[in-house]
Image 1 (cartoon, rainbow, N blue to C red):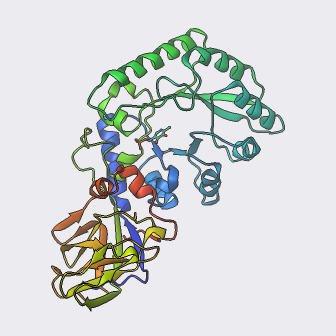
Image 2: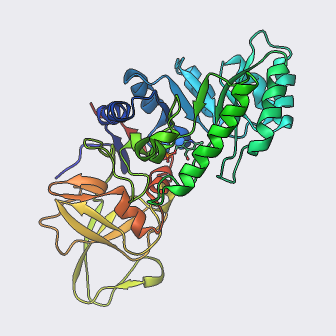
Length: 371
Ligand SMILES: Cc1ncc(COP(=O)(O)O)c(C=O)c1O
């Protein structure tokens, strides 16, 4: 089947499926959503994803880098944005100006924010991140009260939210998540007692959203599930949630090589007979991992990737492909005919998780959003 795309490789994202996924998560949880669009919307293209999520009723977005928040504002996205992690102090003023909420977890951060907010007509909005068990960013539970007190006392700083992050919500064992939930509730009690509890309380990632209602509070922060992918094999996605990304390329060359002919760098593959070998114009510079075991779909059938993946090319074995033609569509992730290669299958081949597969699709691969 010929492709009509003017690209060597591209990603197609189904935004109506994204909206459906969001609606299903909201129906199942009955909680407002902060859509996590960091890492370029997990590789899907964060601006179209965000605009589409806004249409599906999402009003909060979680990003990792200030640059993303700037771009969102430039694109006219007026929704609430929280930078979920570290912000270089030099960028804080800009974030306040753009009405972007900031994460703090130490008195030092608060001091940077207070200093930056001093000269502003707007107040800085902050969310305190408490570490209830992730062992990553966040103040320890016992430090939360003093940080909240100092925040409340700081001029021009508004304590808007309190949050924590789950480390093991995607596992069958519910105990670690229940423990984190308990610790978080204790923090909430302490802040409530001191009349310091902010309005917005959030903890649940996708796994928490789908499998641990006790972590929901009044905002959930799903990432991977809105893209239609499971947080782990142990977490069942609700009926109707579907992957929204396909990754495609095109057959660029067909050649019959004689027996005993090496293919690609290092000749890790050598033909054993006369073999029909195809070339697809994408490689590790596009984020296609240089590991053995990759496969693609062409004319509705699976073809193995053979030899080493190069920077801009890789080779496929066309033996089982009926009537291959230059210009045929090649599917690296997604469906073709009755066959499908899922993100999770690719993750297995790459010895990683689905998150890393979509996030690592290269920036030079255009993202397309067909109607
Ligand atoms: C702070 C925070 N919240 C929410 C998420 C979303 O997690 P998930 O994609 O598992 O739903 C992430 C992702 O890593 C995160 O770092």
